[in-house]
Image 1 (tube, rainbow, N blue to C red):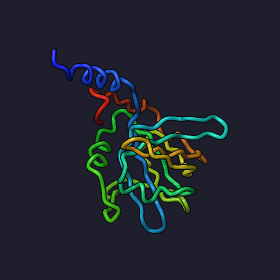
Image 2: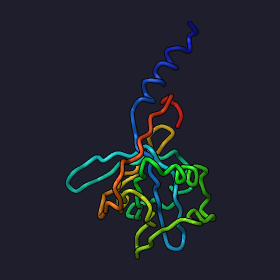
Image 3: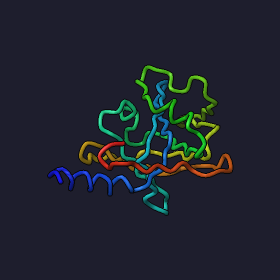
Image 4: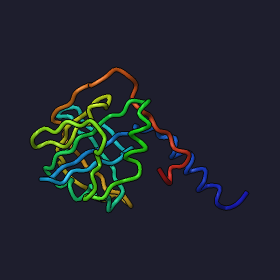
Length: 161
């Protein structure tokens, strides 16, 4: 056994923490984007809040200032096309929604109308955590858009997505 085995074993155990796969959309003014997010969890009932961990220096972070809107679009377990579309990442100058059905409401981030459900949120706070940043968002509205099962993701190693 190599001395790396404890690290590999820890990574395998960490990777077994299940998460969903979501499309987080954000908008400020005329700038809007979307990204694939997996480290999302409800963290309060009253009022409802979510925690979202994003790798530092992601372009979307510039739009997620305190008070800013974001939408968490919950994917159905069949929507692998959305994973492929958003998985490559977008700069803030690129159109992240080309070819997709979206709904734009005033003062909100885009809603993917093909999603299983969506939650509209406001950023409450941001906290650096290791190589990521933790965003806390208050849920202000949401709706179930379809019947189905949410996509669940289990990683082979807890040291990468």
